[in-house]
Image (cartoon, rainbow, N blue to C red; front, side, top):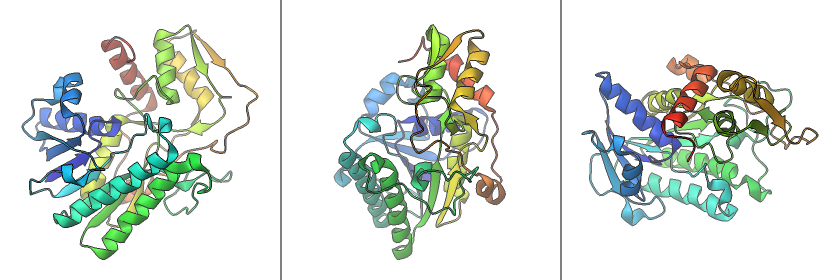
Length: 325
């Protein structure tokens, strides 16, 4: 197996790289992987642990510039994970939409032109739009979607369009498409200085006088360890049914308030949890929890790590590197 991985220097990509490094360490077979990155040298300067593996190569290129994609033959799989979910909210919505849709189209054209047989798109649970009040878990057959008349939904609407584009290519060409609808995650590579509540709470527990909830603490989320994320994505790439979407995430719900208190109890017992906006109304996405029944029953996948284990490991690595970046 020879994989071309886009987004290999982001959160998903680093989770996959660590998964394969651990597999190699344990004597398991590892695929040959090429990472497409705009700045491989800068990435390896920050992460030298990825610089000395015989199965891993880096190629400088950009999904928005087809002329920069690898010319070497032989790729059998594409895992397309190149979307800026960390700093994406800072991008103009039109540019964000273009990045997702044009980047996906370019990678699909590349796959078709080179006879690559399998293509995994990392999509988002955001494609479902607001979770219905009477739904405890979102299932893959739910056909709701975010409001396309709202510019702030550029990311989720673009992911929905990218899914459809992928299936149009499967319909027209000999390429197997698998969709991973990804929810929320926690792990050593999660930034703790941006808009991810779980990362910010861990940072506060380790470094701040109090743990701050910026909203009212009521929204319900769920969190999967990044080690499970990597295993699920790699399994979907190999074994997912063509033309299918699979939810990837945890099906164990927890409120933001309870999450903050859990992190406090694990990392900083007695530290104060502050709810800044107790009287805030909910923002239309007060519950965001997937059903993972399809991945479990069809592919035998399960969560290996608990939320407590994921939080403790994340905190351990933050402390090892001397705090948040």
